[in-house]
Image (cartoon, rainbow, N blue to C red):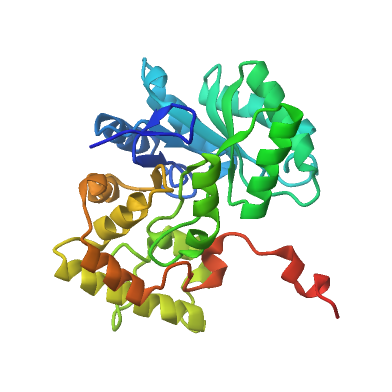
Length: 343
């Protein structure tokens, strides 16, 4: 790692790459020992942030992280996890969401699975229309005061809700959210027009997820070739269905970006990660390798400096502030759903 950055205005030093662990466990790599080796390699390479979530393989990812951090590794890591998604078999309506009831249950479950006394960054995985944000902010503030979490953040929240939460916390004297995790990549650039400028104004750390656009920027998606096999393709087939026009546009853009990377003497993976890390509003990009080979292909991307002419070419392929396939933005405005429109 060439540098460490402050997580928002907290003063906490974090690496420009974060190790995401969604692919460790039943959703991806089922070999716990191999997953632990990947985590150790990332830490040895200078990555000091590990991001997981209770919903990843229903807690299995958190358990794998705990194994990796055993034996004295915990203190040197900024450990982040998330809550909100449905846990269990779905029959208990209160084992999900952003209510105080669930926050208090979820944090204890995560602490137990992670085998730790505290969580450095506890994040609300999604916005919850049915829960007053003041309820969630208050519950997280209590957890900070109790020493169970150090900081609170959000993931995939619309910018207006991120700003609303900042003002609410300030007015109530509560702990404010110090970070947000949005999708951001060469193919998913919407946040450049709203969230990233707001984050700079409010001192919010930005930890983008899917900087390789769910594998579309791995270099394997090229015109005239069969689509590569992937676990994400199996879990979210609609994102890879080539009968959908938006996916065809993604393929064309990914192919153009791969050719640009070749001209620049880079792998598309390194080009994609370097692009995300370069933005002044971005703190740390979350990489999510399933294998050691995938991790090795991503390490060192923070050392790549993209020339202005390369950045100009990128903007020609995917204009600033635009997402090739809107479904990749991670959040859909419920006010635009059919049932909410003036009909």
